[in-house]
Image (cartoon, rainbow, N blue to C red; front, top):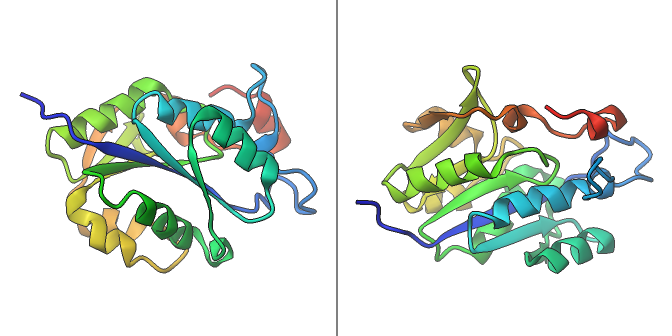
Length: 196
């Protein structure tokens, strides 16, 4: 029997998006998808559909991202050290929901991850998995889910690798999903109109 745990989501939305627009004039997270949702809004909705609490980590100076995420029901927090890399944002976000039993770590520029994938990750955590990764056509993707046993290790991350190090050092449960969205982030203008 599955025990329902109190899971939380951490949405990492603090990157500069320099590949999308090297000038920094256009924030890729606020670009509109064909259905009218902003990139970051779609990513947040998919996560909010599965976990009761989502902490969204943003970089300072992005009020439009903050207001979009707050309107959807995310708890938004600015990470002053976001420029140091993904680990800084991840640690910042996790510290806001450190009392959860587990976390789904999602990326703000991946708007096409299906809710069913998020649910599969959540179910695996609730059934006792410590690290869960979705796979599509044999290749790992995002988001990644962690159980509470890894909290201290996650909070000690310091580089731009994010949690990749833990995926190499500890057993990982891979869940095959029919979801090409786990490999699709928005890095170019063309990505906005391309459905995976």
